[in-house]
Amino acid sequence: MEDIHDIKEPLTLSYNYLPLIIFFGGLLLLAALLLYLSFRKKQITPVQETIKNNQLSPIEKAINELEKIKYDKLIEQNKIDTFYNRITYIVKAYLYEQYEIEVESKTTTEVLFQIKSINLGFDFARQLEICLKDFDFAKYSLYKTTNKDMLESLDLAYSLFKLENR
Image (tube, rainbow, N blue to C red; front, side):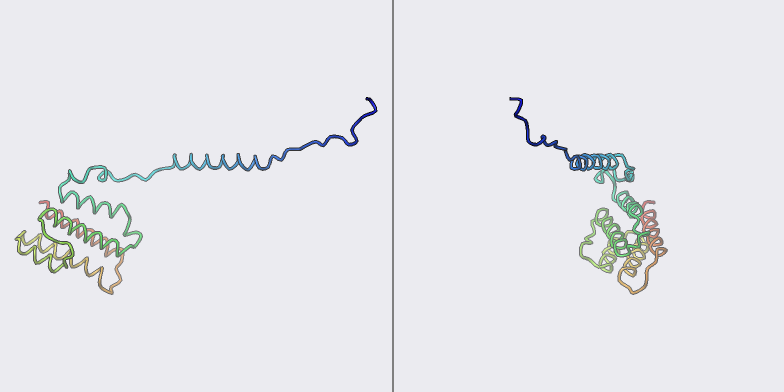
């Protein structure tokens, strides 16, 4: 029996570790990405957003919405159409909630006519007219609106609600 031996030496099988290295490296990268996403600095939302809107008066809701415009940085991003559409919506929503004035699908002229029929006071009605006409001018004219114009419009809206809050 000693005469019987293998003709060839047994082959040594070497294991290819490359697929395992790639697999575990990918898992490690995925874990690192998940850790990064969970611990990165999260954007802090304004305190006003945490308060339920149904507990706020219409004027508080309007002022909070104006704060959201600042927070969304529409002025810095020069999003003119979005800015003026939102600020007009805020003013009209306030009028609807506070005075039950039908503003949906109404023009500025129609809204102002309804305001004058309610007798809200000359100062508020005049300030409201200035606001809405300023917003319409910025939205519909060929005039190139600047960031300064947008800031002035935002201040105009704030002053409207401060005038009403007195």
